[in-house]
Amino acid sequence: MNTKAILSKMKSIKYGKRDVVFSTTLAAMIGLGLVLIAFCVVFSAPIARALAPGFSPDMTRRAQVLISIMLPMVFTLGISTFCSAVLAAMSVPVAMEFAQIISRLGVLAVILFAGDGTSLEWISMFLVLFSAVGMAIELEIIRRYTPIRFTMKIDFHDTEFVTIAKQAAGLLSAVLLAELSMAYMRRLATLQG
Image (cartoon, rainbow, N blue to C red; front, side):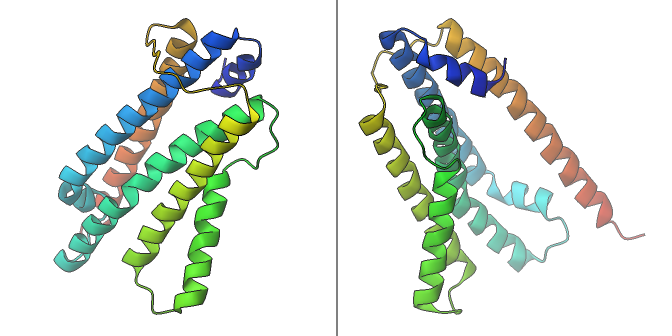
């Protein structure tokens, strides 16, 4: 059973249990997201060297800065995607990937207002800011238009949550292996010989 099917089942889950599954999943995503952000900020130098092995030292430093700036966007878009799936499961008509749409429209507005001279770092910061705005809007839509509520009752042993967590762990493992293999391939491609 995939995550979308599990979220679709949320309609049939008993009211209190649905809140616990939603809250536990959201809390786990927040916790893991913050750990990932901290890890990547601390290790941004080796990550930048692994992802872009042919860069000059100046470009590697710029890549480190951009990694640190953009990581919160992974967090906000991850939470937003979860919110989009919950809204779809609850038959609330909101576009999937709503926060991505908001983040891109916000950056377009900034570029139109500020002009072409906006640096990549500033554009990255605005992408993160507007993705957070989109995420906040989706969380508010969930609060207003669904019976789901965040509660402090969190149960990491709940069977529905365990199923979601196992599928997420499998997906995360596949993504990490794909990124590691691509980093290795980029390193091989930059070897002189």
